[in-house]
Length: 133
Image (cartoon, rainbow, N blue to C red):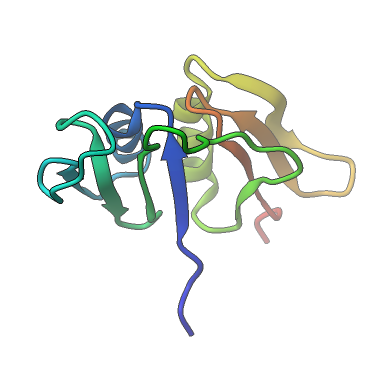
């Protein structure tokens, strides 16, 4: 089965954002500029297409003139149970830098640990795990 690929239109911050996510999750970043693709609907050095390939994969670009950029309501990117608890805490803490912690990653009354953070680029993350046996 093919996994869902998140693709984000950034407001001119795609290069910074993709490098930020590579710092958080690891992986390899590839980026192509508008000039590389022969596009004239934005600055030549703007990112026309970029990817982060690794344990967490996502893609994005700088929104072209007249296009909308990322604005999320009612959507969370879930990393529930996707890594060991220590790794999930590390990711949460890195995503929180210059972001907004809505709910700290901590044990909840139902037994699991989870938390929510909106990172500095506007992505809303739900991160957590079940108790270890």
